[in-house]
Structure formats: structure tokens, C-alpha cells
View 1 (cartoon, rainbow, N blue to C red):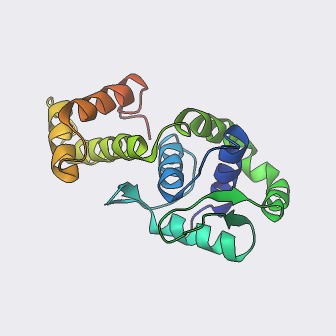
View 2: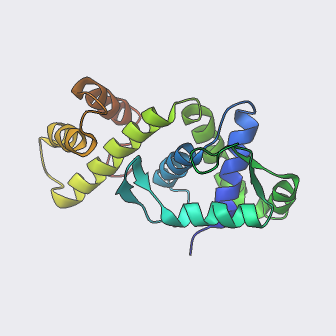
View 3: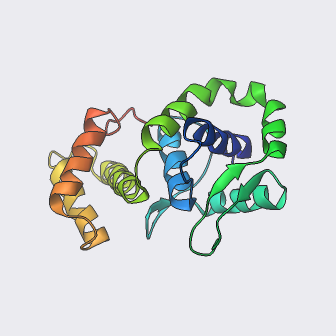
Length: 185
């Protein structure tokens, strides 16, 4: 069962680190994806979708937060774009869950701080490369041409959206950050 408290804590961490920045659906999906890759136990399932790894469970959780008054979407056109902010009710709820999220807050805050400044398109590319790497690794763990194969597959998945240099740069960035290792997850 997904850990909804950690999702709420992620929204809160982003808002505290970037009070003037937009937290939309794509960015929230990618922040949770990468925090999950760093072992934050959201227990969310991801599949490849239009904008990279996507969790339908996460979308449902955020919808429930909105209905419950824990998160507000201040977008003028929520069908096209979201602007999530934790509400005072959501903050009070988190205070009651401090013990459950305390251990994970340094990771949530680091992910929010470092990745929260990136545009959704860049997060999409990074997450797609990571997701593709993990899939390739599960199919052929000893493969020596991993970088080449991941770049090729991402270019096939994304068509003309990203060029080869962008994909290679994203791969190299993730690799240098230690996110393309067997022990990243």
C-alpha cells in the first residue's frame, strides 16, 4: 500500500525549498520517482508514459489530498496544468506524522532542492533514462554496451523530443551522481 504521508511530505518539502516555484503533476511525479530510487518507501508502481515514468497511484493520492483539503491546486486550468501547494490542514496532518517521515526528510529535502529547480522536460529526460537503464539492467545485467543501448532506447521512446547529445548528457549526469549503479535502488 502506498505511503501517502511521504507524498504529502514531498509536496511540503518542495514548497519550503522553492516557495515561488510551480509544483505541477510532472514535476511531482519525477520528484517522487527519484526519491523512491533513493530508497524512500513510497511503495508506488511506475510505468513508462508520455512524460517518462508515471504512477497512477500517485495521481490518485494527490486527488484524494485535494478532496480532503490537504493539498490545493491553484492552477486556473487544472486540466492542462497544476500548481500544488500543501494547505494548513495538510501541514497539521504532517505534524502528527513527524515520527513516520523524520527519517526520510533529508532525502526528500535534497531531492526537492536539487531537482526542484529543473524544468519538467529535463526531469522527464532524466527519469526516462533512469527507468530505461533499470529495465535494461534487469534484462541483461552483464551487458557491456549499456550506455549505448539506453541512449538508443530513449531516443526510440521519445522520438524527436530529445537529441542524442541531450540523452547522453542525461545518462552521464545520472552516472556521475551514482544513480546508474546496481545499488542505487
